Image 1: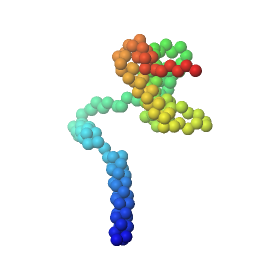
Image 2: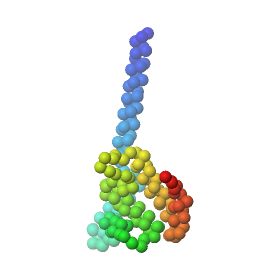
Image 3: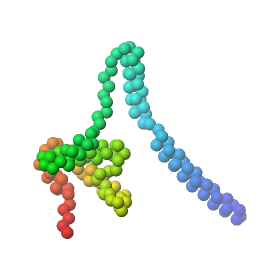
Image 4: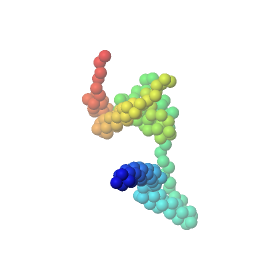
Length: 159
């Protein structure tokens, strides 16, 4: 009777390991596979390119738009740049995106020689970026509307 209990306990433990292995395998599969629609899109682009080479045709290729980080920094951090609040927010988000895309640290996350950012810091940085983007979208190009919406959504803490 005791033997049966031991067997059932050991099979439950093995089941947990199998479930964890299954979850790990699924996560690896997700990380190493490509979305089918993206694959089909790439396949169609490659066919177009091959056809144009075979037929001797020229093909208009749209290169991905790259953001010049140094230009954005100069525009943002030049004294008396004359940027409106809306323009500043747009350029700050563009700079943030470009830096993250290059694999550099998020400029909205606090850093220091003796400070390690926490998950809360990273979450707060993303929240700031999201709120800025929502205000930009809401403003539809109107600086006054942007400023009002940002002030409405910003909590002013007094010390």
